[in-house]
Image 1 (cartoon, helix red, strand yellow):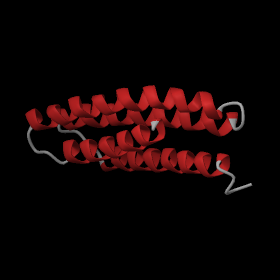
Image 2: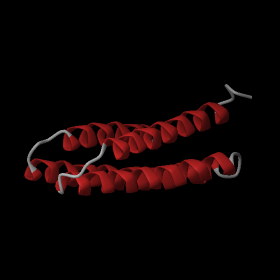
Image 3: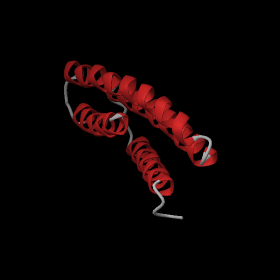
Image 4: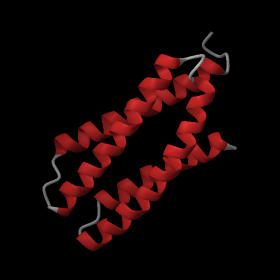
Length: 119
């Protein structure tokens, strides 16, 4: 149940960020920023709960995913701020995409490691 909420929140966040960063008006961008923050809330709460279940078995990967997740949220906030100022650079977008991909890879690896598929 909590894993489903976590995965759904990631999907929600991806969609809200993609829609928000492709809008032309600042007002529309702000709407998606607010909706993205709702996704952060669910992600952080479900992520903390899930990390309590995985930390004793895979503490390094759990910690790495936590750091990457918080970093990704920070990059999303910076990207929205730059978008509102009309200074969103391709380099920042590339860094954001790379951060999101690394976070997802860590999460999937953590799931497969703990479910016994990689052992």
